[in-house]
Length: 506
Ligand SMILES: Cc1cc2nc3c(=O)[nH]c(=O)nc-3n(C[C@H](O)[C@H](O)[C@H](O)COP(=O)(O)OP(=O)(O)OC[C@H]3O[C@@H](n4cnc5c(N)ncnc54)[C@H](O)[C@@H]3O)c2cc1C
Image 1: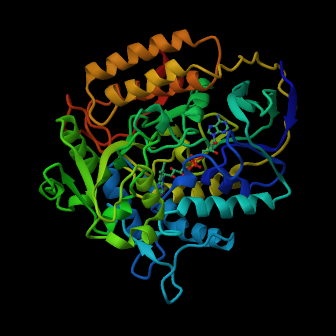
Image 2: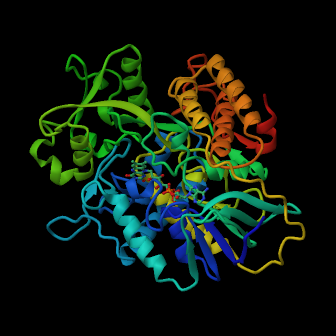
Image 3: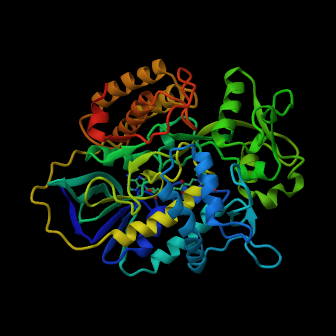
């Protein structure tokens, strides 16, 4: 059943910004497992706007923290926010030393962009709107130089191994279909978010909630799962994932207009197009639901400079047959980011000994009910380094009992398609009890159907079900979680669930 057994001091699952940041700072024999090719795959590579960090002369970690808390609407973990904003500058400087080249002005100083919710210009970016690709390039090159890190790419992790209440390893399928058991005292999940659970998403195919599902199966505490951020401006075309039209476009003056060509955001929020994402996403969605269309018009604000300033978006628009220099782009909200996830402390430790979680898969509490734009790459850098400092490697003996490993179900395209539409239709931007209950019932049926093993489809069903159950249990509206049947905001409260409890709630 097990084709290979590999021992390591630490196994990091996921090769985006968070996994790479952890790998760069973890001592001992480290294996980095990624289902995509090393240096590629996951959301990091696609990040556009940049990294929010208090490095500008007129900025400070306190100002950055206060914007993060304001947008997070009362349920951020204040200590985590303080850690994020005060350690951020050091981590970005470190990234620059690793070779990341951020855009600079004529004087050679870092050039700062502005995005929604930020009180000032604080976003460092690379090659215009291709920040993530530059970060991946620099960090994966730095990891490749580490002699203590072995990379297993094209390798899909599907189960954590628990023995006597602590993690003793993980199981994966390698590139040739071989089953690999990693024996290690320290597993770090860095598997990214859950965007692919939704039919409309900006997230790449790798981002399926695998880490959330694996952690749930070993009973890890999960927090704030209902908070899924919908980005207001994904390009409407037949492309899946939907190309993201970065918020930096609105920061540069692009405006949202309806099918009459009229701006609508100014009447809804004083910050108009730069209002927090949930507000812009709901306003846009309410027009689309009413059968109208919405466009992002950058023809005046950016115009002929589009190809130079926003090359990634320009290329995507061209692929869809559109020219943003002269015409508005049709947009829709799309699932973009998961604020909730596996609950961790300030060092990435989950509730299960031996299991750390970093990056988008983790719920550090920095984002609250609404992530401040461009705070997630920073979170991966800061908390990846902190997790590494707490991963103390010492080899454990092989688990006494090697658990039965379910055979992975590789293909269940029908179930995946159904999960994605169900989540968009019933667990999307505007939710209510009857839609959520209907989604949970159907996901229960699907999960019974898939119980014969693990694998991507089963992971997706489980992750979707946990999010739907969490959304039904939060009877208020706050930030990204909007309940038509409970539109008011109640008392601020972060919600922790132990996975086995959640999994049995019908
Ligand atoms: C289009 C887009 C633009 C964005 N722009 C910005 C921005 O400008 N600024 C910002 O701060 N944030 C931005 N974000 C969000 C940000 O990119 C992500 O939150 C962040 O990159 C997540 O990093 P991560 O390391 O946690 O996960 P990811 O970068 O998603 O990496 C996940 C890794 O896990 C691997 N993996 C997943 N499941 C498994 C498994 N079962 N077994 C093995 N490997 C697995 C994947 O292959 C991948 O290597 C953007 C997101 C998108 C989609």
